[in-house]
Length: 60
Image (cartoon, rainbow, N blue to C red; front, side, top):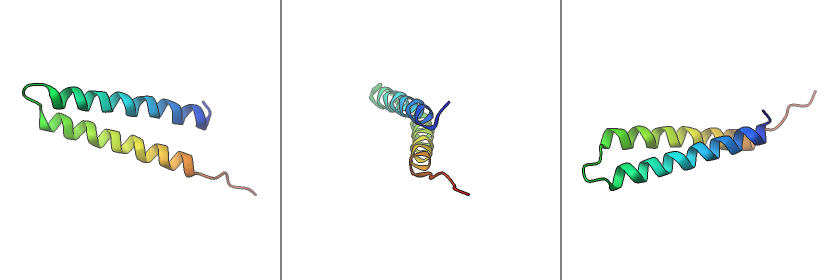
């Protein structure tokens, strides 16, 4: 899998987590622990996307 493909896959996961956070937040009795966990995972994915986007190949 190329870096671009990996970034695109991470973006899909990020969007899916955003939907899950929205769904959990709008239900009658949202679970704060679940929302916190989803937000942490979303942030980890965002950090990974940023890391991969800014990584530069090492030339020898």
